[in-house]
Amino acid sequence: MTKLNTVTFEVIDCIGIIRLNTPPANELAVPEFISPALFQQWTATQTLKGLIIMGEGKNFSTGGNLETIFKNSSNPETLMTMMQDGHALLNTIYNLDIPVIAAINRVCFGGGLEIALACHIRVASENALLAFPESNQNLMPGMGGTFRLPALTGVSEAARIILSGDIVNATDAKALGIIDHVAPKDQAFEFAWQLMQKMTRDRPVKVIRSVMRSLKNSFELSQDQAITEEIRLFCELAQDEAIRRNTEET
Amino acid sequence: MKPYDVTLRRPDMTIQWHSENQVGRLTLNQPPSNTMTMGFFRELRILVTEISMDHTLKAILISGSGRHYSSGADITELLNNVNQQTMLENYQAMLMLEQLKIPLISAIRGACLGSAFELALFSHFRICAEEAVLGLPESTFNLMPGLGGIQRVAALAGRAKAVEIILRGNTFTGREALESGLVDAVVPKNEVLPCSLAFADALPQTLTGIDRKALLYKYFKPSHATIS
Image (cartoon, rainbow over all chains, first blue to last red; front, side, top):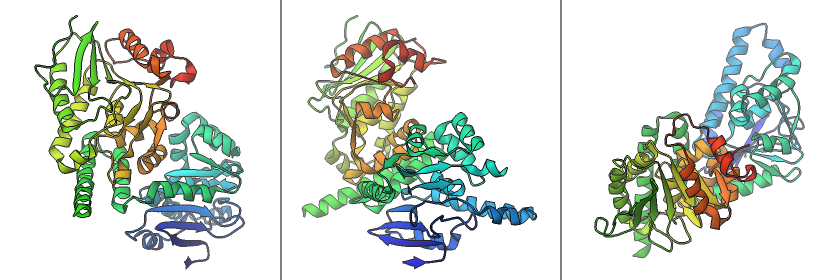
């Protein structure tokens, strides 16, 4: 296990697990909560089939440290760079070609929620609480929350949640489309692990990465480009599988 | 209007085609599972070209012969004939259907899996039996959907749902598909064809500027359609 002060990483059965590790709040000292070099090192392993992001202890995360924000606000350039670095990290997570699940127990606020929104699938325990409390401090979500939330809920609900700062429970979050699954009390990780197993166990890494790449293409490329790439990836998998079956027969 | 004889022109007869009251009926016809073989796709490519020249049609209804829509491609045959050019032509045939100026409706009963679900995803409306079995099981064969299914599921159900159902490869019911936005309406299985035909008959002849929700609302109970 790679142990750092604030975040830990381990791999179990080809699934990477990132833990925000400053319990009980798992507050994010800086927006870029993992250094890009370290994140790259963790996820570069070609055998990795999926990633689960969770909080150590009872909560997911209470979000960013407001002191850090206000301390640096006198120096706009530093603050800007800091936010951009955090944003870039979340984009890297969002663009991974392995599935990323956020396993959310209890508190998931502000920057914590922005991390969860950058994951591909969100599992939250029935006692999870989600919120963007930034507006209570005369701030706003600064790491993609303002565009990732409306993509899931529509603009009107996102505006209500962000401007009110209201806490959303798991049931409502599911109905709004913010989370994808409700797990039993405090069981987000267990649920996420089972789901990850169903998606990745017995699947060759190449199948997983080809599907994830095609999904990404479907949002980023034109329909023509996306289908050309999809067919190319499909034919590669089919050739591999034909060879595998022929080898098994002989 | 007399259905024209398909036996002469399509000796394999894996697709039946005729029109009734200006509604074209495209029936996948290799019961029980209506497997989409290479022969099927060959016929589809020819048929689509012909359909595109028929300007008397006001809608097209796609369904399966017997109890199922279709179980999808023949995997063994497919693996022995991997070819990017053919795949692209098959995709283009389905795209051409979608791009006809008239509504395309899939009436889904029983199994609708893999390539068959992808074909249904090219339709403008999917009317589905509540207990129909849908899915993209390709990843369980170490493959992936290859006819645009990934893009269409992502657009209809969102990225999270798409990641999950494509990597899991699990099947789901018509009711579950409705909840994910992957089909437009569910009805009891005996009503799928009559409802779809009545719906096809009542649709405007052009898709431009149509209000999907209003159309669905006229024919289906709110709890059974993607209206709310």
